[in-house]
Amino acid sequence: MRSRQVRARAMLRGDLEGEELERYVEEKVVMTNFEKMLGWARSNSIFPLTFGLACCAIEAPISIVTARYDLARFGAEALRASPRQADMIILSGRVSIKMAPVVRRLYDQMLEPKWAISMGACSSSGGMFANYAVVQGADKFMPIDLHIPGCPPRPEAVLYGFTKLQRKIQGNPDQGWRTRYDAHGTEEWARGGPRSEPSADAAAAYESARELIGA
Amino acid sequence: MPDAPGLELIRGEIEAAHPGAVVDTGFAQERAVLSIDPAHVLAVLGWLREAPGQGYRFLSSLHVADYLPAEPRFAVHYELLNRGRVERIRVKALLEDGSPAATGPAGQRLPEIDSCVSLFPTAEFQEREAFDFFGIVFKGHPDLTRILLPEDYVGWPQRRDFPVGGEPVTFTYNERQYG
Image 1: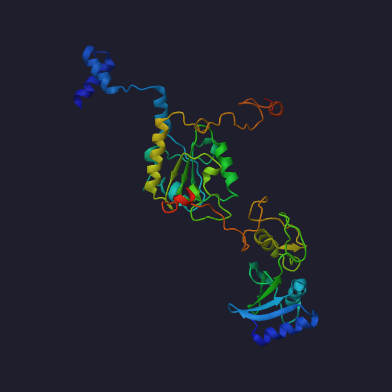
Image 2: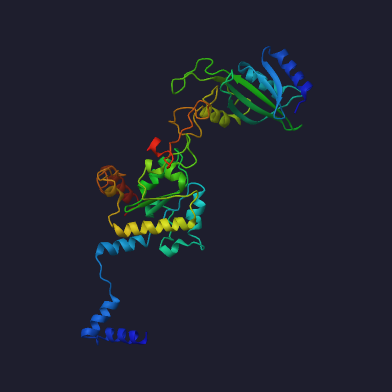
């Protein structure tokens, strides 16, 4: 330990040379490519959406973020209350046919790259609710990255599923669901224009608003 | 709860005012039941509400039951409560399927009955729920639309002949059947 500290000090002074410098670099520097680094960074700072559907919500967003199971260990402790700021949505519970459009809208509002976990039997397949009111599997109306079985899954299962998702993100940096589902060109834009260009109406409204506040 | 003679007295008085209104009386699940003809539902409920000595002024529940093989098929249940005496009585309006002719969103004939919102304002949501799940049309309801299911839902899911729904799930023992 002491020798390492001495070596680091010598390195900072610029005194290390030759083989010693090589060894120092070998110890201290990790070589990788940008894609891998990006995947590593993304997978370790996932912002889940504060969102619950049914009884699984007690297990997922509530139990695993609190001290006993502590999702913060995996870098996902920052639950966002807005889908605009969230990276991941956990469908925790049965999705009724009346809730499905709402869930889909929340998912559409999240910014890419985004991931969705279907937690528990109900959101994966309808579960015990094989009836007129519940969607038989959330992947009927939105892309799902990961299904966690259980009724409800234990928090350990959710954590295991979450680490699986992290590995998925690291293994394949191109995790945009439009690529996975070959769905490029299906984007819907809020203001009618392509990409981020505002429509003429929106631009005019923006200009008049600026005039109103005297900017 | 009125006892058996009391229930017969009520029946007699209603019969005197509205002949043919009461079809049957009885006791079920420890509750006095007055089975009535749906054509007289407002008259009977109004009488129970306003007549001296009755005063069933509180509608604690309105719901529908589907007795499918039986005729008439539907019954609209009105659970009335006299809050002064804490006495309850159940009024059961027996409804034929699709009588008289009314056309629902799916083109089927829907059973009709008079809405009792004018007597009991609390019935507004409960009649909407009954319409939502059983397709009973309450004539004179201010806004008879679906309340719990999506507005574009087709069908009356709490009816006994409505399919349960769901999808077959493949397990190892039935994968050949569904696989």
